Image (cartoon, rainbow, N blue to C red; front, side, top):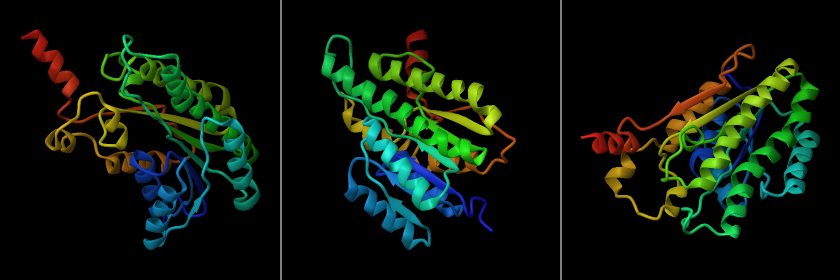
Length: 253
């Protein structure tokens, strides 16, 4: 029997990248997956691909920055599926004009809503469902930028992802007595659509050397299939050829 047979997993930002790969990986382990994102067409395509492999996927679009919309998806899960075992809190974004010299109030709002508020909304919506069952697992996608400050990701994105890391650890502190576990994954460069917002475009060779979405999907499945008495608090995952490290070493020479 698949390790997650009978469980329900809710994946946000599921239309592409890490969310899409995580949905495939959890469905392959037997979980019924609920796909949330802003674009229904992308979610439907992911659901069809999962169904073609024998998995079960439900599409529930929502803007994770809107608390009411997120709560509506959680209500649907509770009323229709009757349980929530796993939340993959993955929705996130960045902007092109991200440096202090170019930041605008609108850009800051976009970053905070798309990265930090969305993560809090997902966790808050999932908690009552998990508490009612006496346990559950949350997996949050942060970033290397959630642990290390550099100009590459920009101050707004970096601050938001630091917040997601802190949020995840605080969930373990307050909810471990309820059997709820929280894991924050901090990827370095991953080949996802968020790279399209980079001020400087990357070559195909550079993209191929990065962590791929499927690598993160396997990591999500690994965390999700650990026994309930084990909590993996935090994971750093990065390309072997880490361009940030190489740049730092070059400056030392």
